[in-house]
Amino acid sequence: MNHVEAAKTPEQIRRIEYALADGHGQVYADIWKIGINLALRISDLLSLRYDQVAGDTLELVEGKTRKRRVIRINAAAREVIDRRRREHPDHVYLFQGESNRGRALGKPLSRSVVSRAFKAVGERRSIDLRLNTHSMRKTRGWAMHNAGKPIELICMTLNHSSPAVTMRYLGITQEEVHALADEFCL
Image 1 (cartoon, rainbow, N blue to C red):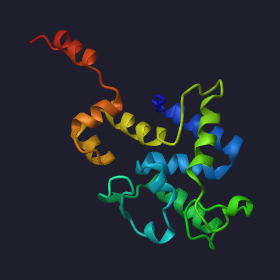
Image 2 (image 1 turned 90 degrees about the vertical axis):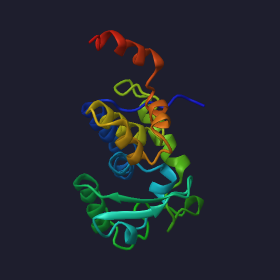
Image 3 (image 1 turned 90 degrees about the horizontal axis):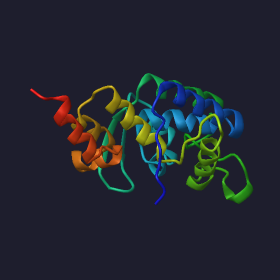
């Protein structure tokens, strides 16, 4: 499996968003922004319907884990959702295809199309990250980790089964744990 990278600074996050909008269209930048803010897996994100995001919270059963999740929709995600709804009042899905090619009309965008756009943007010299659709969740986890949020809280946000899974997910290594021995010499 390829190593997936996260954007680790607000500047990287913005550059990726702008590059997606510029090179692939606003819908891809919107997927990036909402994906970072909701920390959903791409399959769950692309299947979101407007009737699911009508209030302040989003309730769903994750496709991969079959776990029930309740997620608060923050202001950044709400802004994108509301704008997309105004621009596409006849759409059912938040990220709905508008092309008859490949029978996408009336259906959510496919994971493969979004993945190709993310990969292409990641390969740009100005970005230079191995991006794919999972980079959004990883970016959310990294942002929380860098802000000093407890690993247990990040674990709950990402709906991981244990803090150990979250630590592996974020790439926290045994070497980093060993380095703390010298840093916290009490």
